[in-house]
Length: 376
Image (tube, rainbow, N blue to C red):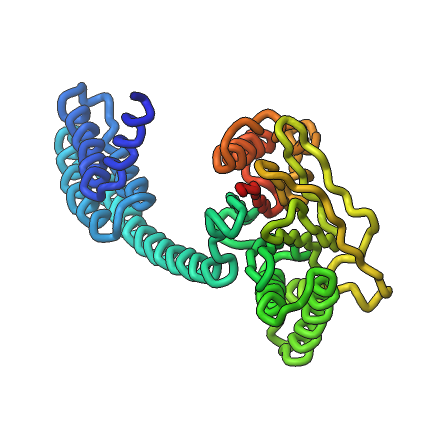
């Protein structure tokens, strides 16, 4: 009941004429109090606050209308208080006029910035749809659910990434975390996703995939550096373009009771089997993608049993490194164990809500989680 009422009030407040009516009612209330009370109590000067405050939520045209109502109201208040003929009235009235003009200008600037922000959000939404394609709810033998929270409040995409691909014999899922932030990180996300999808089309095996992604990422970064304009690129962007990415790729083959995992420096997936939550740590460590030129890793693929009904939770370090007010990290494995009896969407939504409660605000780092369940 209270939720419905709150939603109705919020929807009502979004209507422009409701906001205008509110401003005019405040002005009428001040003028009425001025006219009906003793002349020793003068609050007519407060009327100038109405157009000034209106500039924060009304359009320039509506603020101008409020101004046109405010000026005669101030004049009537001066008549009522017998201050119309005083030497101070012209100065005070001129002050009201100047503040009113400033209010209209402020509303104009605010509206322009709101339009620019709306355009930026639209561009971000388009970029997200191109890079982070929504994962299907069902892919082969798997049911899939995912969540993404960008650290930047006005951003739809950050440095975390997830993707799915289908090969001739298998279904693959990747969750990764690109080092850095801003434009450079988003570009690296694009490179990583493009290479991941190309590998599926070209028949690259899972054992070959990490090295393939590493080479492609380093080649793209070299090309980007070679073609960048040092006079226009920021230092932050160049540093991000010299970065790396951690990633974990899981592969499921139809008719097999196992999951194959290739991990390049990424937090290990969690295997959820009934009420048990197990961390699938890699048997050998490997450098993140983009750093393969530092040493030659002989990367192996780890294999784990995956029965019908078993779940995997893939996530980025933004989840397990999220801190509460006391500085404690988010205990993902312990918390997810509370909701193993829920369906996949409800489980990951519960983790998301619990994580936000844990940090008490927006996470300091990007957050990505992908939960999968073997159905057949």
